[in-house]
Amino acid sequence: MNPVSYPYENFALQGKNDGLPAQPGYPGPPEYPGQPGQPAQPGYPGELGQPGQPGGPMVQYTTVNIVSEAPRDHVIWSIYNLFHWNPCCLGLVALLYSIKARDRKMAGDMSGARHYGSTARCLNIWATVLVCLFSLICIIVVAVYINQVKDSLHRNYQTNLNNRYRYGG
Image 1: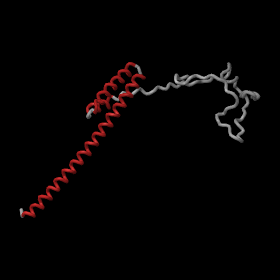
Image 2: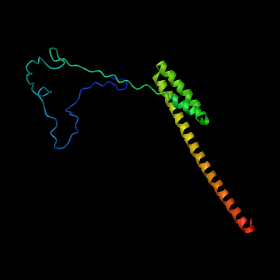
Image 3: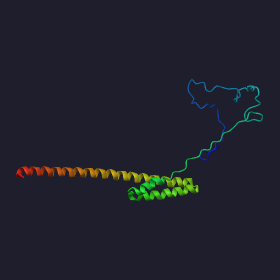
């Protein structure tokens, strides 16, 4: 198996390499019979030869196909942003990109679908952040306004009480 993203390399290994870094005092990997430079050991009973050679045991290979996840189009999120305040028309633009991503996915163009889906996702994130910030600002403004009205009414009530006692009303 040679995936497209990994180039095929064919070269002979130089020297001994057991995958461990060289360490002082470490004797290195053990030498086994049958390695280059070592005397061959007679085969086991019933073994006809070396693996991969005629008469040798059969080597089985397993092929694993890794299927990447289909690109997401974020249509539901875009529809939500379209109907929920839709700041700067970002929900509408995100919906258009989501539909383009879905069309590309149905046509089999996964890279185009991934591109449009990513753009729709970014637009949806911006729309959601702007809606949340605007909501937070509205809540703060309403709370401050209510507090000022309450203080004004309280001052007005205190003034009326003081005037009533002062003028005998």
